[in-house]
Length: 173
View 1 (tube, rainbow, N blue to C red):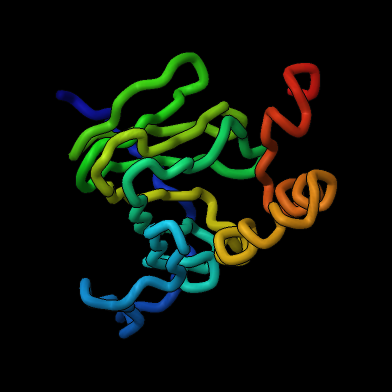
View 2 (cartoon, rainbow, N blue to C red):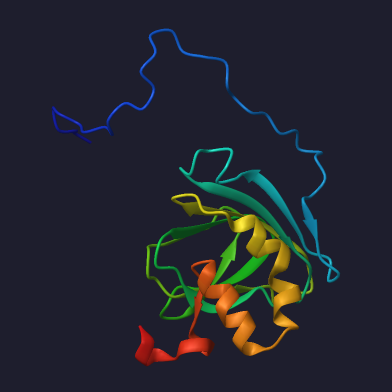
């Protein structure tokens, strides 16, 4: 493969000459940041705060037969899924596909997507949001907000850049 002579990188944001010590290490045995009653768990690997808004990276463990997320889209960020283990049904905006270990789905800004575990086995995946957004509040409060009624849930989702088709229908897209 040949590359153009002039590759364009983003403008430098670090202007020092010698580099600095600022890496963050998270051991694999760190407990999840959120555990759900249904056996799911979310690990905050890299948050909006820790990356300066560049991206958010989360490890999501879903128990067998977990509902996941219904069809939705984001107006401000892309979302990517990388399957670490097990199987997950991923909706790519057109059809459901089965994601298996090593499979990857990239959903650009505005792209419809959904996911669910329909198997009798747990699964694990990485979810990447770019640019970063404060998704932690969403993960921590969405279950509670769903108990407060559809209008409050809809406002909560919109505040977190999550536009579910069940809230707006196709005419809103």
